[in-house]
Amino acid sequence: MDLLIRAVQIIDTSSPFHLQTKDILIQKGKIISIKDKIDAADHTEIFDAVGTCISPGWFDLYVHLCDPGYEYKEDISSGSKAAAAGGFTGLAALPDTKPVIDSKSDVEYILNRAKGVIVDIYPVGAVTKNCEGRELAEIYDMANAGAIAFSDAQHAIADSGLMMRCLLYVKKIGSVILSYPHDNSIAPLGVMNEGVSSVTLGMAGIPAMAEDLLVVRDIELASYTGSRLHFSCISTKSAVDRIREAKRKGIPVTCGINPVHLVLDDEALHDYDSNLKIYPPLRSKKDIFALKEGLKDGTIDVICSAHQPQNEERKKVEFEYAEPGIINLQTCFSLAYEALKDIMKIESVIEKFVLNPRKILGLPIPVIEENTLANFTIFDPEKQWELKRDNILSKSFNSPFIGRAMQGKAIAIYNNNQFQIS
Image (cartoon, rainbow, N blue to C red; front, side, top):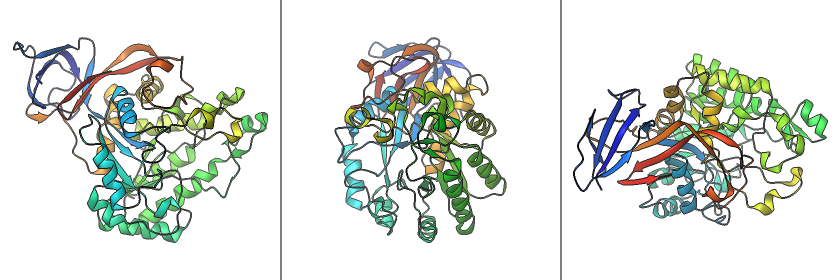
């Protein structure tokens, strides 16, 4: 299919056309021409992009796809549709499925199921067998089969010696561990951030220290082993400060955040909405300020959706008993843009979606220039829209943002010689 995109502003600091408004011609999956004005042949599809922007395709570094085993919550087909609607052309699928992605055959299952999909789906292998934190999984075999990184998802590896051996192992194969920093022994019954709100609401709190302890430990282990380590979703001021200092020392650590932690604090739980139960939990206004500062100064590398579908039976219960998680593929950019539009340039925000996730995983980075494979996202930062139940493409509906007015939306994506309008 030949495609001509009319009058779109290019947001790509690696492109010679950065911040310029151009026509872009794509033929057979490749960008052929970028000019002020391109005449379309008869067989060419034309997409009028006046007033919108184009960037290299967005990448989500932290997604629960639930397939295999929990397909009633989400599967690769529905998850990729939601990702495409949210502007993502690639994502990393976490291994906490049933069975857990902890062997070569499990990795191959994901890759085979994802063939032909417009969104590139990269399996993340489990660090330990069954994500139980007891014994190393088949890391080498999974890497050879196509696992892009290794993680136990939301199961922190409590054993420091095992974590050290994991880091040494992945270093040998040039991979990276995605760490979830949460010491469950600090607050095993905690369901929300420890603070004034948790006392007022009468719910067990999770102190920031539960995150800080494992951030400190894993930074020290990364320093000792020289292995790359990525903190998937940090949420506290202390974590930002620790990681900033580690980077200053040259320790090979990176980190990401879920934009929900930028727009809501723990006071939002006043009506016990179980859709707001997520891990790590909503924190304080002080933490939100620190996260924004971390994004501005480059301490925080990545914005990810932390998309975690839950069926309604798991959410329509008392807050304490509800399963954690929010669907966020379709709202991730909007939430991030809402929080950051007044303090960061749009190209700096997009960098957290495009450049850094792929750098961490060692993936090729798309560029908006001639004679390159087309992998891009068209988006409108000014578009006003509302998430409604009938426009959710996930199988699950566990979002606190249904009915909420939002600004900024993906309009279309192009990848794998396919074009999809949201």
